[in-house]
Length: 125
Image (cartoon, rainbow, N blue to C red; front, side, top):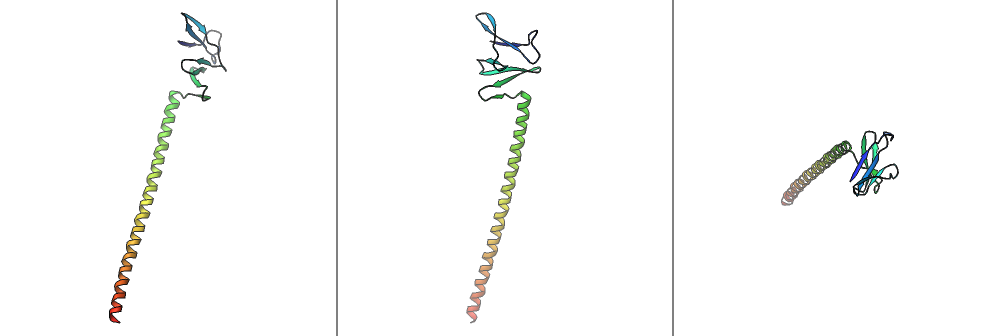
């Protein structure tokens, strides 16, 4: 069990935590100003009116729900932009292929016309 509260005499930026052990609440010793939770493997810290989770293994804060929402929106927008760029590149490649095919058909038609002209000249001559 883990309990965090701002006790009387503790500044707003601080918090105190207690663990229930053998039916009694015992204080949790802060580590670097944070309250470690053995159960979660995270540390808790009061940040204004919020409690924030800190992951000491990755040396970083876990995002708040609002931060997660903004990160999700940003990632979605980035993915949509990447998809749009990929689609534009696909269209350009398709257009280039169509142009090459048209040039090849034109060259084949010209080759056929020249063969016919050569055959006609050989018959005349």
